Structures are given as structure tokens and as C-alpha cells.
Image (cartoon, rainbow, N blue to C red; front, side):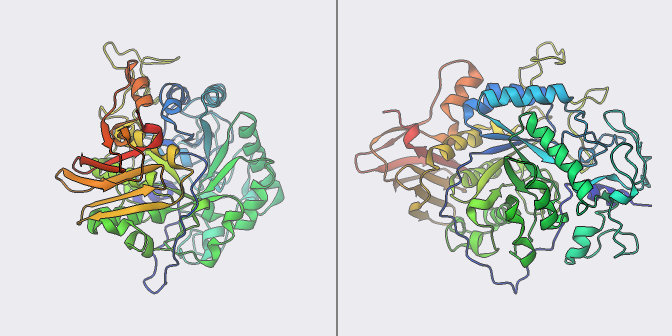
Length: 521
């Protein structure tokens, strides 16, 4: 029988939690001289498909977001209390979850594509739901969101006992030694039924699932628990989907580019957990200069090469303190979190992904729900199935339920900056002002000032930009403002003089960012 803590850990993202990098391991320098070319991803965590579609049309497209990572669309185990992690316990590959059914999913991909926003699916293909259906605190249902019933290693019409790994390396077939890759690849992650993806017939069924999603307009995949699959087996699947689109793999390296890591990039980019971990450390504990080349940000860990890394301040797992996330910055850190996002979106390393959360106090907490356990709408007055709430605003963001960090002006504005400077990979004109202020350019295209101090900072900076009046992107992009208000765009203006100097006051714990596309005259 498992304890409550064990089952929570089981479902929490299914990331293999390696210990933090060893002090004796000499970090390799990180190269960040290649700008990402794919645009910013936003993770709309646990959103309904109709809400994702509406958000693409009303905000994401106008604000310049390139893609949405959506929650797993395959049928999942209905767990009492409806925690978030039930989405990571698949029951079948039917597209029917609390986010919507197959028809709603296809409509979402079509509508988002029409406004230039890709859909990336969080693909759970390493395992199925809890293997023994035992829990000490409540009774598992053995039922799925599409009406399927299942039992231990028995998913009727899909999988049976011999389709799973039964590793025999530990007394209970679970992973106990996270540094033993045989266990990590072949044993169960706290009783989650581990698919034997080395078997050709198992591979074929997974390929069929991913290919079906591609046929519905999916533009790529985030492969959940990729570190729990042998690289060769995973590549055999991804390479046979045909054109799988953009693929990125959940691989937590523990801050080390160990030998076992090296084969994964054959299948896709890697989620660079070290970036958010180091960024949280710097913003909490070090002079801001540590963000720059040669500083703690880049010397404390080894990093995936820039053109093969997906970077993020936090994700749905480590924002709950798991997988080495104890020092991670989250929406609960307010302005400091927005400042971290400003750095992630302006520094030329990796492809950025922005987290969009719902409010939570417990590891167990699922998304905002209605009394019938259906997921509460974000766009509360739009689309089929919208809740009737007289007097409610159009979007249920920032009201204690859906957080919607991606809509914060200090974050969404930096998406526009990121898009404007993607062709300028170099960091130029670095200027350090004490412990709490740094500034840097992106070639001759953009310029950023970060102020971590609790007091405003007034100063003059050499930007290298042409004379003119610019909009401060960190105050929000005009196009997104126009979308939100249905009125004329507003702009916090700053002035660059004929010598390329900017004299400005930067608000406490805030950024200032300007670029050529934000020039008004």
C-alpha cells in the first residue's frame, strides 16, 4: 500500500528527480550565441480547449505568442478530489478529458492555427495510470474520463500485462536509485504502469496516438517523463511519426551534462530545468551582475546548447516545490517573478516558455472547478458551455482562481521584445550599477534595464539605438493592450537622445525594455 505522499509524488509531473549537481563536477561554459527562432511558448495549464481557442484569438495571437503547450488530451484516470496530476495517469488514447472532447480539441487547433499560434501537446507515453490501484487515503476509481474501466496492467482494448516493464531490479519494481539509469528507464515511477516501449508493437500503438494528434493539427509535442525512456526507444517512436513537428523532451539533468543525456537531443530539444533553478538563486541571493556572462547564473551548472534548450522560470511541477524546485520563483513572488520572466525573455539563451497557472495552496489542488467538477471557464462569457454569472468580467484572470501570468503586462510586453530582437543574438553594451541594477543591449536592436531594488532607479544608459521615442515593453505591448481594452493602444514612453543615450527612471523590482519595433517616432 502506498502513502498519500507517495502518490502525490507519483503524479507530480513524473520528472525523475536527480540530486543537484555535484560540487566536484566542473561545469562546462554555456554558449548562448544562437538566438532561438521559434518564438515564445505559453503553458496554459489545465485550460479547457474552448478557452485555449478563445485565448489564441483574443490575446495570444495579438500579443505575439508563438505556441501553446496544452495539458495531456488523452483519457485519464478519474481520481477522487480531481487533483491536477490525474491528467498524467492515462487510461486510453481517446481524446476525452475535463478540457474537452475530440471535436473541441480539433476546433481549438484549427482556430489557434488561423491566428498563427501552434498547439503543442503534453504527450504522456512512458506509462499508464497507477498499476495496482491501491491508496491508503482514498479508493481509486478504476474509471477514465471517457468512460473506460481498467485494472492493474489491464487497459481493455489497448494494453495488457506483457505490454509493461516488470523490471525485477527492486523489491517492488519501483525506482529507488535515481542515479541508476537501468532503474530510471525500466522500473516504475512510484507504481505508475511502465510501458515496455522497446517492444515494436507497443511502439506502433504510441506512434498511432501521436500521428492521430498530428492529423488534427497539432504542431508538436512536449514528451512527458522522457528521461524514463531509453533514448534509442524514444527516438524509434518520434522518428516514425513522420513529421512530428517541434518536439521537446522533459529531461531533468541535475545540472550536469552526463553521458546519458547526450543521446536525447536526437529526438528533440531538452527542457532546461537548470535555467530556472539558477535564475531563482541569483535573484534571491546574488548581486544582479551574476546574471551576466561569467556569473553564477552560467558557471554554477552545465547547460544544454542554446539552440536545443527550452527554458522557463517555473513549470507546473517545480512551482509546487518538487524536482529540485525549492528555490524556484513563481507567481506567488509577484514583481520578482515578473523580473525573472523579463530576463528569460530578453537574454539570448534557449527557447522561452511562459507558465500560466491557476492559484493553489496544496500539491493536490486541481484547476478551478464548478460544483459538478467540470473545469471552470476562463473566458466566462464566451463560447458554448460558458458559465452564467451576471456581472462577471469576460476573463476570469487574477481573481483568486486563474492566475494568467502570461497576461501580466510586465510579461506579455516582453514577448513582443523577444520577437523584435530574435535576429540579434549578441549581448552588447553591458552596464552594471551596484548590486541591483544591470543593463544590456541586444545588438543594435533592443536594450534592457533590470532593477531588483525596492526603490526606483534613475540613471543614464548607452543604448546604441537611434534617437526617438520608444514604448517601454515591460509596461505591456500596445497590441495586447489594444486587444484587452478594445480601445486605442497606450504606451509608457521613454526617450533616446541623438547620442543613443537613455535617461529614465526604472520602477522598483521592474524592467525597462525598448526595441526598434517599439519606436514611435
